[in-house]
Length: 612
Image (cartoon, rainbow, N blue to C red; front, side):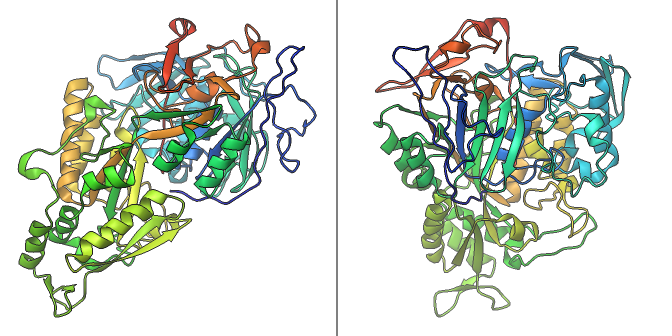
């Protein structure tokens, strides 16, 4: 969920002298705050600045659920495994290998011996065992990733290099546990995981490719490269996430060279940048769905309902009629201007094994006449003023939550108002910087929803289970939209326990079909990842997947770990130790991806998180 505020931008200049060795990119202080370590006079520093449009919800990996936050945690803390950059297969992360027992109820992981925490302490299996164990015993520590440990029976570390996880029943995500492993000696001092935000002491102790050194709410997050990262140090000295509430301001900063990279471009912004000097636009199939969500009656696990959702939306007939009056093709053509694919199932087509779409009579095609007939038959008839009313005389006037910083929400809302008005239904659009507060309180009728999907779909399936509901109305929970359907839960549980890939994929499709049939969500589009970067700042960078993939919000840390400064000749063969990745070569017509041989030696995978 998106929030942003304007702020002074970092000015990123290319420092070069014709008669000297190429100097690294550096960022002269924008009003004195460019360098996390205060070394503003060090012109040899290379700084990669990313414009972001989402507020950090927490620097605690136990609480954070937004994409920007979980991206930071993937840079700061290692997971047990990672996703291969080419095909998303499991590859080593903190664990170098893993072996299941014949019953697959016990999994043994070998923890690498060449990983250290940034304070010099060795990373051991005890850190992983403590991380998982705390999530198993403390509900507040399980807020973000509790779905992964809910089935754990016992976790132990018999020696510093061995982690053993015992399960209650089979669990297919044991090589896709997207849980950041934290240092036990730091986190065991935390008293209350529900309130600890991890933003009081810098640099944050981590073991990932970058280390967080400074943070100011809705302004910036600064990170420095971890020279001791086991895979090899990143090539940029510093990484800065700079906060922009206005997307046009971020694009203007890119043009001026004040930032190096801008994600989530509108079609108009992308078109304007294609001919700009030193700027390359990357337009790739996205890993996110864009949906219309209805309030199904906000509820907690204790059975108490809360919120102010319109009761008519509890009627499947009303939800079906609303969705039949949404022309998804028009939204793809007019709002996304072709930079999206028409939405159908829950998992985007980029993840082919799990992609599902409705067929035949099941599919909700655009049919406003049928929508009107459904409303009439359900007792929602037009009054003398042409307004739809229920049997209680209450008009069908709905509210929709809109992200103030997302122009797509506003544009789609205008179409919905027009289409639904023809049915006699009113729609009030409420655009907020922070939609989370009314959403979590259940104070909405409809909302624009969107999630980035992991290569393993378990997490985005889990957020629609009854188990994801908040314990009480005062709690948060992991639920996306308060959906609780027992038939869906059964399918979710079956796919989680199925190790056979083909059988599991079929169960994932059945779960999507059930979610579709309940009619609480209408996936309208799968937006492309449209983003741009400066070629005079970034010489090469890895996408995920390697072929025609995206940079921001990708599955892991590959882009930022692999990014090479445009003036990084001093680093060639130096101490970075890592691959140069995939080159995105600027050209007048197309994006050219050239694989460099170093990837043959080290296969990589990236992991995601992504609650938005």
